Image (cartoon, rainbow, N blue to C red; front, side, top):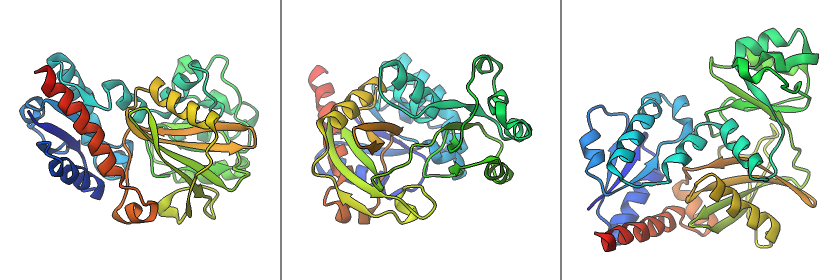
Length: 309
C-alpha cells in the first residue's frame, strides 16, 4: 500500500511532504500530473494526496488542472480515497463556487458581484452603473448586483495574488482590464483590513494548527511573496476559530488554509485553499513545520486504511 502525491511543479513543500511521510514510515511517491500515461501509477495508490494548485494555470501547468476531473472520476470508480476529498478540488479551482457554498452554510464572505471575462468587463466600463451586465454566463445575468467600488478583481481559478487588483473607480478598472489574461475573473466587495493584517489559518484534521497575522503590502494586498510581515496570532477569538473550522468542513477540506479579514466584531472569509504551501524559510519563521504536521495527518489516514485491509 502506497500514498501517491499528485503534484504539478517542483515546490519545496511537495518534496518536504514526501520526505516527512517516508521519515515516519509511510511508503509514498510523487506522481507528476504534467506527465501523460501515468494513470496506472495513480490507480495503484491506496491513498492519493492532491498537491495540484489552482495557481498552476499561471505557471504553465494547465495540463495538471485539465487532468484532475478525469483522474478524480477514476479514483471514485476505484473507491480510492483522496486528501483532500474529491469535492475540495472543485472549491480549490473556483472561488465563486467556494463563496456560494460558504454563504449557503451561513459563513460571512464578501459580496460577490459576478464572474466576468475581460472582454465583457471592457464592454461594461462604458456603463458603470450596470457593470453586472458583463457576467460571463447568461444564467448569472438576471438579478446580478452592479459592481460597487472599491472592489477586488481576481481570477476565479487562481492564487498567489496573480492578477489580483483592488479597484477604486472606473479608470482603475480600465487599467486592470488591459493587463488581464482571457480567463474568468471574479469581482467581489473589497473589505478593508482596518487592523492592518489578514488572518491566515492552517487547518488540519478539523483543528487550527497555525494562526498568523499577515501584514498588508504597499499595494494593499497581503502575501508572503509581496513582502508581508508575519506575526504569531496567540489570541484568536473563539468565534473566528469556530467559523474557520466549520467553513473548512463545509468545503470538505481536511488540510488547507483560510484567509480572514477581521474588523472589530465582524470578520469575513476572503479565501480558502485546499492545497497549503510553505517554503523552507517559513518553517523557521513560523516555528512550525506545516509539511511535517500535514504528513502526520496523512499517516493517520493511511494507517486507518491498513487496519481496514
